[in-house]
Amino acid sequence: MYYNDNTIIYFNGEFVNASQASTDLYGQSLHYGYAVFEGIRSYAVEGKAKIFKAKEHYDRLRHSAEVMKMPFNYSTGQLGELTYEVLKKNNFIDAYIRPLVICTPNMSLSKGKESHLAITAWEWTNGYLANKMRLMTSNYKRPNPSAFHIEAKVSGHYVNSILACQEAKDNGYDEALLLDNNGFVAEGPGANVFFEKNNILYTPARGNILPGITRATVFEICSELKIPIVEMQFTPEEMYEADAAFYCGTAAEIVELDSLDGIAFKKQWEETLSSKIQRAYKCKVLEQEFIYS
Figure 1 (cartoon, rainbow, N blue to C red):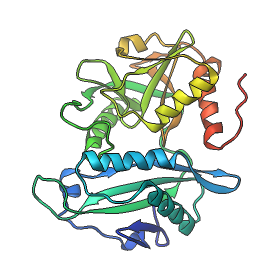
Figure 2: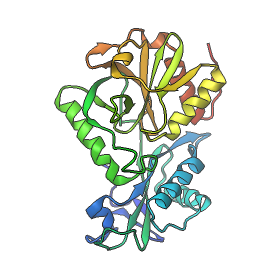
Figure 3: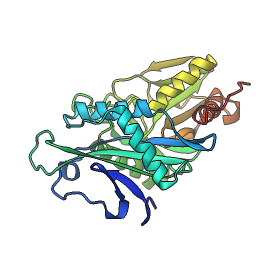
Protein backbone atom coordinates (compact mmCIF):
# COMPACT_ATOMS: atom_id res chain seq x y z
CA MET A 1 0.00 0.00 0.00
CA TYR A 2 2.75 2.47 0.89
CA TYR A 3 5.72 1.24 -1.11
CA ASN A 4 6.81 -1.25 -3.73
CA ASP A 5 10.08 -2.72 -4.97
CA ASN A 6 10.94 0.55 -6.73
CA THR A 7 10.26 2.98 -3.88
CA ILE A 8 13.22 5.07 -2.70
CA ILE A 9 13.49 6.54 0.79
CA TYR A 10 16.14 8.50 2.65
CA PHE A 11 17.51 6.58 5.62
CA ASN A 12 20.54 7.10 7.82
CA GLY A 13 22.43 9.28 5.34
CA GLU A 14 21.59 7.42 2.13
CA PHE A 15 18.88 7.06 -0.49
CA VAL A 16 17.94 3.39 -0.38
CA ASN A 17 15.25 1.04 -1.63
CA ALA A 18 12.39 0.96 0.87
CA SER A 19 12.06 -2.81 0.72
CA GLN A 20 15.71 -3.21 1.72
CA ALA A 21 15.82 -0.68 4.58
CA SER A 22 15.98 -2.13 8.09
CA THR A 23 16.27 -1.03 11.68
CA ASP A 24 17.52 -2.63 14.89
CA LEU A 25 15.13 -4.65 17.06
CA TYR A 26 16.88 -3.33 20.18
CA GLY A 27 16.09 0.35 19.54
CA GLN A 28 14.35 2.58 22.07
CA SER A 29 11.96 3.80 19.39
CA LEU A 30 10.50 0.36 18.79
CA HIS A 31 10.36 -0.68 22.44
CA TYR A 32 9.24 2.58 24.05
CA GLY A 33 7.70 4.72 21.29
CA TYR A 34 10.65 7.08 21.70
CA ALA A 35 10.59 8.64 18.23
CA VAL A 36 9.35 11.87 16.66
CA PHE A 37 7.82 12.42 13.26
CA GLU A 38 5.92 14.75 10.97
CA GLY A 39 3.13 14.41 8.44
CA ILE A 40 3.65 16.69 5.44
CA ARG A 41 1.87 17.14 2.11
CA SER A 42 3.11 18.03 -1.33
CA TYR A 43 0.73 19.28 -4.02
CA ALA A 44 0.82 19.82 -7.77
CA VAL A 45 1.57 23.52 -8.28
CA GLU A 46 2.13 24.48 -11.92
CA GLY A 47 2.78 20.85 -12.70
CA LYS A 48 5.52 20.38 -10.08
CA ALA A 49 5.63 19.08 -6.52
CA LYS A 50 5.36 21.87 -3.96
CA ILE A 51 5.63 21.03 -0.25
CA PHE A 52 3.10 22.96 1.81
CA LYS A 53 4.70 24.75 4.76
CA ALA A 54 7.91 22.71 4.73
CA LYS A 55 9.65 25.17 7.05
CA GLU A 56 6.92 25.03 9.68
CA HIS A 57 6.85 21.24 9.64
CA TYR A 58 10.59 20.80 9.83
CA ASP A 59 10.98 23.46 12.50
CA ARG A 60 8.47 21.45 14.54
CA LEU A 61 10.30 18.18 13.88
CA ARG A 62 13.51 19.72 15.18
CA HIS A 63 11.65 21.13 18.19
CA SER A 64 10.11 17.72 18.92
CA ALA A 65 13.55 16.08 18.86
CA GLU A 66 14.95 18.79 21.10
CA VAL A 67 12.30 18.55 23.83
CA MET A 68 12.57 14.75 23.74
CA LYS A 69 16.36 15.05 24.27
CA MET A 70 17.10 13.26 21.00
CA PRO A 71 20.36 14.15 19.24
CA PHE A 72 19.41 15.53 15.83
CA ASN A 73 21.70 17.71 13.74
CA TYR A 74 19.81 18.33 10.49
CA SER A 75 18.85 21.91 9.65
CA THR A 76 15.40 22.85 8.39
CA GLY A 77 16.92 23.69 5.01
CA GLN A 78 18.67 20.33 4.71
CA LEU A 79 15.47 18.48 5.58
CA GLY A 80 13.56 20.32 2.87
CA GLU A 81 16.21 19.57 0.24
CA LEU A 82 16.31 15.87 1.14
CA THR A 83 12.52 15.67 0.95
CA TYR A 84 12.38 17.18 -2.52
CA GLU A 85 15.01 14.65 -3.58
CA VAL A 86 12.86 11.78 -2.25
CA LEU A 87 9.90 13.13 -4.24
CA LYS A 88 12.04 13.48 -7.36
CA LYS A 89 13.48 9.96 -7.13
CA ASN A 90 9.96 8.50 -6.87
CA ASN A 91 8.32 10.82 -9.42
CA PHE A 92 5.82 11.91 -6.76
CA ILE A 93 3.86 15.16 -7.02
CA ASP A 94 0.72 14.76 -4.89
CA ALA A 95 2.25 12.94 -1.95
CA TYR A 96 2.16 12.39 1.76
CA ILE A 97 5.60 12.70 3.37
CA ARG A 98 6.57 11.05 6.65
CA PRO A 99 9.93 12.03 8.18
CA LEU A 100 10.77 9.94 11.24
CA VAL A 101 13.57 10.28 13.77
CA ILE A 102 14.44 7.06 15.60
CA CYS A 103 17.08 6.17 18.16
CA THR A 104 19.80 3.53 18.03
CA PRO A 105 19.92 0.46 20.34
CA ASN A 106 19.54 1.40 23.99
CA MET A 107 17.37 -0.52 26.43
CA SER A 108 17.80 1.93 29.31
CA LEU A 109 15.22 4.59 30.17
CA SER A 110 17.53 7.45 29.30
CA LYS A 111 17.85 9.91 26.44
CA GLY A 112 18.96 8.66 23.06
CA LYS A 113 22.68 8.52 22.34
CA GLU A 114 22.34 8.67 18.55
CA SER A 115 19.47 9.04 16.08
CA HIS A 116 18.68 8.06 12.51
CA LEU A 117 16.50 10.02 10.10
CA ALA A 118 14.11 8.34 7.68
CA ILE A 119 12.13 10.28 5.07
CA THR A 120 9.43 8.23 3.38
CA ALA A 121 6.66 9.28 1.00
CA TRP A 122 3.76 7.81 -0.91
CA GLU A 123 1.21 9.06 -3.40
CA TRP A 124 -1.83 10.64 -1.80
CA THR A 125 -5.40 11.51 -2.76
CA ASN A 126 -6.76 12.46 0.71
CA GLY A 127 -7.86 8.98 1.60
CA TYR A 128 -7.41 9.44 5.35
CA LEU A 129 -10.69 11.12 6.21
CA ALA A 130 -13.82 11.80 4.19
CA ASN A 131 -16.43 14.51 4.61
CA LYS A 132 -19.47 14.18 6.89
CA MET A 133 -17.71 12.35 9.69
CA ARG A 134 -19.91 11.10 12.52
CA LEU A 135 -18.09 11.66 15.82
CA MET A 136 -18.32 9.95 19.18
CA THR A 137 -17.07 11.54 22.39
CA SER A 138 -14.38 9.10 23.42
CA ASN A 139 -13.99 7.53 26.84
CA TYR A 140 -10.24 7.97 26.36
CA LYS A 141 -8.80 11.32 27.41
CA ARG A 142 -5.89 13.21 25.91
CA PRO A 143 -2.56 12.74 27.76
CA ASN A 144 -1.97 14.99 30.74
CA PRO A 145 0.22 17.91 29.56
CA SER A 146 2.10 17.71 32.87
CA ALA A 147 3.17 14.18 31.98
CA PHE A 148 4.07 14.60 28.29
CA HIS A 149 5.36 17.22 25.86
CA ILE A 150 2.03 17.29 24.07
CA GLU A 151 3.16 20.09 21.73
CA ALA A 152 5.72 17.65 20.30
CA LYS A 153 4.76 15.08 17.67
CA VAL A 154 5.94 11.92 19.44
CA SER A 155 5.26 8.41 18.15
CA GLY A 156 4.27 6.98 21.54
CA HIS A 157 1.53 9.57 22.00
CA TYR A 158 -0.45 8.00 19.17
CA VAL A 159 -1.29 4.83 21.05
CA ASN A 160 -3.91 7.05 22.69
CA SER A 161 -5.18 8.00 19.23
CA ILE A 162 -5.41 4.37 18.09
CA LEU A 163 -7.44 3.41 21.17
CA ALA A 164 -9.87 6.31 20.75
CA CYS A 165 -10.30 5.85 17.02
CA GLN A 166 -10.92 2.12 17.28
CA GLU A 167 -13.39 2.62 20.13
CA ALA A 168 -15.41 4.96 17.91
CA LYS A 169 -15.37 2.55 14.97
CA ASP A 170 -16.37 -0.35 17.21
CA ASN A 171 -19.41 1.69 18.28
CA GLY A 172 -20.48 2.47 14.72
CA TYR A 173 -18.99 5.97 14.39
CA ASP A 174 -16.44 7.28 11.90
CA GLU A 175 -14.07 8.99 14.31
CA ALA A 176 -13.49 9.98 17.92
CA LEU A 177 -13.50 13.30 19.74
CA LEU A 178 -11.20 13.36 22.77
CA LEU A 179 -11.56 15.47 25.89
CA ASP A 180 -8.89 16.74 28.25
CA ASN A 181 -8.64 15.62 31.86
CA ASN A 182 -11.07 18.36 32.92
CA GLY A 183 -13.82 17.25 30.54
CA PHE A 184 -13.32 19.96 27.93
CA VAL A 185 -13.04 19.22 24.21
CA ALA A 186 -9.41 18.79 23.15
CA GLU A 187 -9.01 17.38 19.63
CA GLY A 188 -9.46 14.38 17.38
CA PRO A 189 -7.10 11.40 17.27
CA GLY A 190 -5.08 13.10 14.53
CA ALA A 191 -6.71 16.47 13.90
CA ASN A 192 -7.70 19.74 15.53
CA VAL A 193 -11.39 20.64 15.87
CA PHE A 194 -13.41 23.81 15.19
CA PHE A 195 -17.11 24.52 15.48
CA GLU A 196 -19.17 27.36 14.07
CA LYS A 197 -22.09 29.12 15.72
CA ASN A 198 -23.74 32.42 14.74
CA ASN A 199 -20.94 33.14 12.23
CA ILE A 200 -18.19 32.81 14.83
CA LEU A 201 -15.61 30.02 14.87
CA TYR A 202 -14.57 28.35 18.14
CA THR A 203 -11.63 26.05 18.83
CA PRO A 204 -10.00 24.64 21.97
CA ALA A 205 -7.34 26.84 23.53
CA ARG A 206 -3.73 25.71 23.59
CA GLY A 207 -2.53 23.79 26.61
CA ASN A 208 -4.14 20.40 26.13
CA ILE A 209 -3.73 20.01 22.37
CA LEU A 210 -1.11 19.60 19.68
CA PRO A 211 -1.54 23.01 17.98
CA GLY A 212 -1.35 21.87 14.39
CA ILE A 213 0.10 23.61 11.37
CA THR A 214 -3.21 23.23 9.54
CA ARG A 215 -4.90 24.79 12.58
CA ALA A 216 -2.57 27.78 12.22
CA THR A 217 -3.45 27.95 8.52
CA VAL A 218 -7.15 28.12 9.42
CA PHE A 219 -6.32 31.12 11.59
CA GLU A 220 -4.55 32.72 8.61
CA ILE A 221 -7.55 32.11 6.36
CA CYS A 222 -9.98 33.50 8.92
CA SER A 223 -7.85 36.63 9.25
CA GLU A 224 -7.88 37.07 5.47
CA LEU A 225 -11.64 36.47 5.25
CA LYS A 226 -12.41 38.48 8.41
CA ILE A 227 -14.05 35.52 10.13
CA PRO A 228 -13.85 35.84 13.94
CA ILE A 229 -12.23 32.99 15.91
CA VAL A 230 -12.43 32.42 19.66
CA GLU A 231 -10.02 30.09 21.48
CA MET A 232 -11.70 28.78 24.60
CA GLN A 233 -12.60 25.77 26.70
CA PHE A 234 -15.94 24.18 25.88
CA THR A 235 -17.77 20.93 26.49
CA PRO A 236 -19.25 18.41 24.04
CA GLU A 237 -22.70 19.60 25.13
CA GLU A 238 -21.84 23.10 23.90
CA MET A 239 -20.77 21.62 20.57
CA TYR A 240 -24.17 19.94 20.22
CA GLU A 241 -25.64 23.40 19.55
CA ALA A 242 -23.19 24.24 16.73
CA ASP A 243 -24.24 25.25 13.23
CA ALA A 244 -21.30 23.32 11.76
CA ALA A 245 -17.99 21.78 12.74
CA PHE A 246 -14.85 20.47 11.10
CA TYR A 247 -11.60 18.65 11.73
CA CYS A 248 -8.38 19.92 10.23
CA GLY A 249 -4.95 18.39 9.76
CA THR A 250 -2.28 17.89 7.13
CA ALA A 251 -3.68 14.56 5.95
CA ALA A 252 -7.33 15.41 6.57
CA GLU A 253 -7.15 18.99 5.26
CA ILE A 254 -10.57 20.48 6.21
CA VAL A 255 -13.14 17.76 6.91
CA GLU A 256 -16.84 18.44 7.41
CA LEU A 257 -18.31 16.87 10.54
CA ASP A 258 -21.85 15.57 10.32
CA SER A 259 -22.71 15.01 13.97
CA LEU A 260 -21.44 14.48 17.50
CA ASP A 261 -22.83 11.63 19.61
CA GLY A 262 -25.74 11.26 17.17
CA ILE A 263 -26.71 14.94 17.27
CA ALA A 264 -26.46 16.52 13.82
CA PHE A 265 -25.06 20.00 13.34
CA LYS A 266 -27.73 22.48 12.39
CA LYS A 267 -26.82 24.06 9.04
CA GLN A 268 -26.29 22.65 5.60
CA TRP A 269 -22.53 22.61 5.04
CA GLU A 270 -22.70 24.67 1.85
CA GLU A 271 -24.39 27.50 3.79
CA THR A 272 -21.63 27.83 6.40
CA LEU A 273 -18.47 29.87 6.80
CA SER A 274 -16.73 26.57 7.50
CA SER A 275 -17.43 25.51 3.91
CA LYS A 276 -15.76 28.70 2.67
CA ILE A 277 -12.75 27.97 4.85
CA GLN A 278 -12.55 24.48 3.34
CA ARG A 279 -12.51 25.90 -0.19
CA ALA A 280 -10.05 28.64 0.75
CA TYR A 281 -7.69 26.06 2.23
CA LYS A 282 -7.69 24.07 -1.01
CA CYS A 283 -6.86 27.22 -2.94
CA LYS A 284 -4.06 28.07 -0.53
CA VAL A 285 -2.26 24.72 -0.81
CA LEU A 286 -2.56 24.86 -4.61
CA GLU A 287 -1.45 28.52 -4.65
CA GLN A 288 -4.65 29.58 -6.39
CA GLU A 289 -6.67 32.73 -5.81
CA PHE A 290 -9.76 32.27 -3.65
CA ILE A 291 -12.76 34.45 -4.45
CA TYR A 292 -14.87 34.95 -1.33
CA SER A 293 -18.57 35.01 -2.12
